[in-house]
Structures are given as C-alpha cells and as structure tokens.
Image 1 (tube, one colour):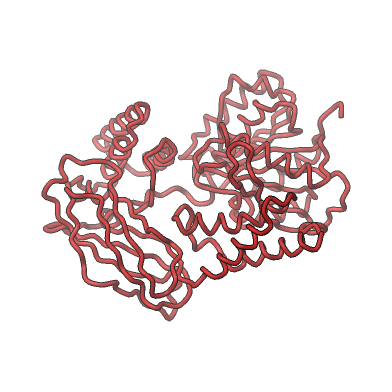
Image 2 (image 1 turned 135 degrees about the horizontal axis):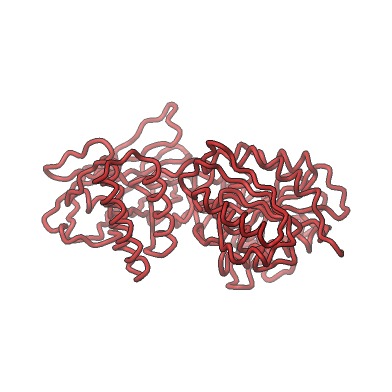
Length: 489
C-alpha cells in the first residue's frame, strides 16, 4: 500500500494540503513501516502502539487533524525526539505557495497553516527565514529572500509575500526555516522546522496563453487525441497550484507536444497513428468531466494485429508514470522482450486503494486502449505493486470476466472474495521481510484462492523487502502472463 520504489521514510516537512482520509492513510503506512523497522524499547513500543490506536480512532471519527497529531507524536516517540510545545507546533505547520511556477523577479505568497490545533501553542514564538535553494546546486548558491519574520503560533495561519530574485530558469526549493525562541532542535527534530516548497522559475505565461487560446478556438472538436492536448494545461495548473512537483515536468516540452497534436488534427491526421514506444495520453472522465492521464507503452514489434495488453497499477503515492519510469525501467524492457503492450492508469487520488472512481479510471483507460488499438480480449492481464497489488485483486473481483491472469506484488485484499476469481490464473509475489505490507496478507489470499480451486504460482522471496521483490519478478510474471488466455473466446 505505499510509495513504490524506495522504502517509505517519514519526512517532517511533507507538504499536505487537506485533512482527509487519504492523507491519514498514507501517514499510517509510514507509521507502521517505521514501527516495524526501528529498534524500539518496550516503553517506546507501548507508547507508539497506543498513539497508533488513538490515531485510528480519531480517523474513524473523521477527526483527521487529531489523527495526524497522534501519528506525528508517535513518530517522535519512536525517534527519541522530545515532544516539546515548539516541536508540536512546528510539526503541524504545512507550507504552500500561491504559485509554484513563477517568472523571475515576480512575488510569491507563502502560507504556513496548522494541520491540527495545539493547546500548547500559546506563547510559542518563532522566526521564519526564507531561502531559495537551487535543486541542481552545481555553480549555484542558495539566496536569502530577506530578513527573518516573526511567526506567532497563537495567530496562525501565517502568510508573507516575497519577491524572487532574477534567478536562472530552473527548479528550486523555497525553504521556510523556522527557529523557536529558546529551543535549538537537534538531530531528527531539525527537519520539523524546515518546510521545503518545490517551485520552478521560468517565463511561461506567453506559451500558456497561446495554448489556451488555441484550445479554446478548437472548442469541442471531437477526437480521442484532444484530451491529451488539453492535459498539458491541466499539468501546468496542477504544478502551479502545488498539486504535483514542477521538478517532475518539462512544461515547454508538454506545450510543444500539445501543439503538435493540434497541428495534426488541423491537418486531418491522427497524431498517434503508427507511433511506438512510451506514449503519454489522457482522457476526459465521464464520472466528473475531469482530465485523467495514463501512460501507454507500445513495443516496436507491434504489427497492428490483436495484441496482449498488461494493465499495471502503481502504489500509494505514485501515479501513471511510476510503473514505467521507476524500477529502473524494467517493465518497459520486459514488455519489449515478451511482446505485450502496457497501460498504466493513474489511481485518481494517490491513496485511493483503487476503489470508487479510481476503479472506474482503470476500466475507462482499458476501454480507451481497446478503442484505439487492436487488443486481444482473450489476453488482457492485470498486475500491480503495493496498493496496486491490492487493486489487482479488488478490481479483478469486481470484473471477474475481463482478465486472463493476475499479478499482485506485495499486496493483499479480501480473502473471502477469492472464489469469485478462481478461474483466473495468478502469479503472486511477496517478500518475507516486508515491513510495510506483512507477507501474511499474500499468504491469506493465496491460501483462500487455492482452497477455491484457483491456479496460483506463488513466489515468496526469502529476505525480500516491500520494494526489492518487484522489479526482478516483472520478467517472470510477463512470461507467465503470455502463456495464459481466456477460454471460450
């Protein structure tokens, strides 16, 4: 259930914008991973267990701020960090910029808002120093953005406006460095007093305006490629609002791709006709009319005849790019070798567990690919890692007639539903040293499946962690998949 490629480590400065169930779920995964990983004495473990239970009860009551405070305090206990009033307040503060994509020399507004209230906030005084730090530090130095400003813990949220220097185009972090009067945080406590806000400095407004005007001129023009062109602006808006880090994007390239799609449509051509390799696409969801992205990998050997398709689901905190870009690119290499297409939906919210609209996204993306390419309906496969492993089982149970084989990795699910998918062969992977999703989760599912009569090839990796088991099994899993075909079609 977690973030995909590296073990989850708790980051005190993690930017969280909404007190919602997904945020609490993500933090609970981190919490339990740390509790299973750190060397704790009996007193620490008892306190961490109690605070974990308190957080769960608060979350069930939809008191998400209280749940986060309990989790943060429990993480402090596990790391031997004193839960002082200043540390409690500093941990609660979440930073945000009014714009994360800014032109050189323009102002930005910085806000620090508390994720939860603290009865101990009264009297806590802090100073905030704002510093612009280049992501690529070669030949560049951090720059102070003026004198420090006072932060009164009893009068939050805190807001200040600063003007950026005429800095070179690039990715930066605007750090808000807090210092509490009379307290010098040491060791693991220091990170709570630094709020790192990703931003990108570049003059993009003209390109944005031109693309908006061109899309508006096209209007409601039909065509499956239009949402992909429109999504370039959606990406810009998401990055500018802080929903995703701008450092992950090359927005000029995104705009150029969108304009190339519009050029092709103007000329009456299909922008994706004959294209192979790694494609970034989007569609407009019928659920809420939002643009939703997906990635599609088409091997060079695709010949236009009906081909097998693998639907690959990312883990918690990931997105449509995770399965293809992470794991050292193993999935693309193995798909090219075996000869299968791979499509990677975005699980809507990063902690959706592929329920509700996120499940619908997966099925809608599958329908998009089946519409645009020749797919062998007898050979559609579903796999996923972590949260994607949970989603593999749950979506298959909801749509038992769609998939020819399943590949859940480091996941789990509802063992009582295994009888619904007993006819679908499975290749299941889990490490026996998984400290994020205990191996017992897959063991339960495999045992229930076998009792129901399912064909399951189970690989429990000795010493395998939550992450390390995934990439080495992609090749064997795809080899298993291509041997499977739905009967009777």
